[in-house]
Image (cartoon, rainbow, N blue to C red; front, side, top):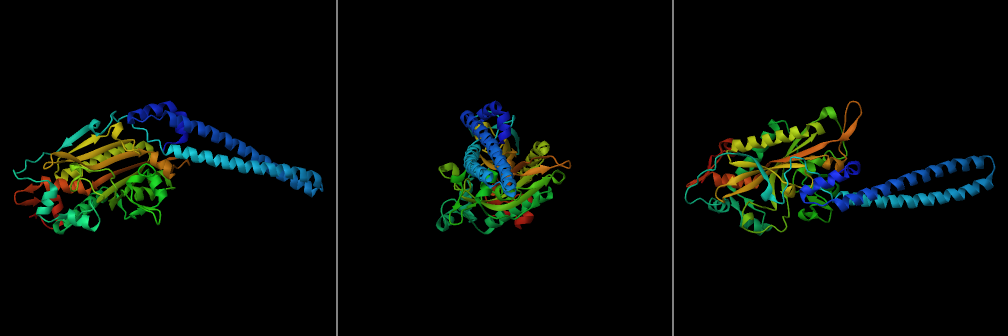
Length: 423
């Protein structure tokens, strides 16, 4: 979330910047500033009341020692009144703090200057494109038909076990899925990312820390009996490993990677565009997360983009990179680049990665700070990206590598799969 001091000092600029998101923050920002002024006044009053109470306590003690009990009792009555006033002020202060926090949680991150204006994904800006779109044979099919033909993914069986959006990978399909996970992890660790295995369930504090709560509460699976949430991405547990930490500036950057299944309710997602692997409730993803000094974070974002580009070029998949417009930008992000693979059989682009810089937005929620050698403290910058999400990468491989007599395996994956063709 945005810092209170930043809001107080840049109120007009924040309101103007958030217009790029088509978000009118005028009323909320003004209310936050007003509540915070009231909160600060209460804090001053409480501090003065407590100071007066402490002073009286010392005077009362001295009076009792000197035998002036009557004067001490008069002051004791006054001290009791001050303590009652202090408790009332504490309650009022807590109420104001809660109200400010609840409002802060509703304000999205301020977009970076590079974010283009726009209302929806149609207004995203293409910044890069690479790879040749293959010319498929006359009887080419979408991946869900190929999955059935070669018996590598069973959507109906997953529906039987759990429901729609929970596929079962079989035989060479399962091995190809495992190969992609291992390949992505190897690419990430070779690039300097430390691998972590993290929990697939998180508590409420973790959800608030990275911004999934309260913004995306309806999209997360909630285990009500234990008040835990199934993770929508490894970003949540990995970034929350550093919640509340004071990091040494010389230890940055911290670069993490991890594989997890991801769980998303995807409420309201229907239609032909979500068939097969295009949109799932459970899917696998390999994530990269970075903790950076503020002055280094945008260079880090560029390096993450280049890293994902290298993976897609090794897979020899046609792809493009989009800079998300304000209307399509995630709640917590200051700047996001989406990667899309072209599905030749579906004749459409499929999103397979998002790489984002959150600047201090998550770090403020996480209380994640940096201290330099001189003792100066500041909030860290956090970044994350998919490297990569598997379902649509798998869909792209199945469709773009199909031949009349089977599905070729990208050369870079063959040492992981142990086979070079599905037929």
